[in-house]
Image (cartoon, rainbow, N blue to C red; front, side, top):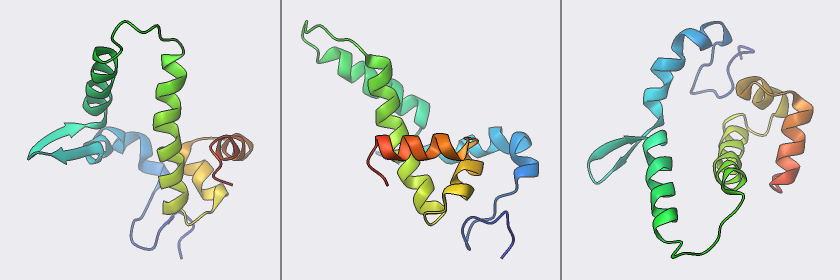
Length: 110
């Protein structure tokens, strides 16, 4: 198996990562009711919905709330994709392996 393959079905080449980042963003599109929306659109919609339903309640730490809501499934999915290989996951995410371990522990993923 090639060292840059994280999954037998999906190749990953770090040499073309920056060139393909824009192209790869198209894969962050989800399909809902036959309309395509980006991950960004879905976050925007979820936040508008969240604020619309506050009904005057005070709110703090929205930034941390959003990060944890996005980061946990990101880490879960990447760990699934790399079949639990933290070294490969840290490279894929662009994180130090120690930082990845800390985040995985934070979310109870290890």
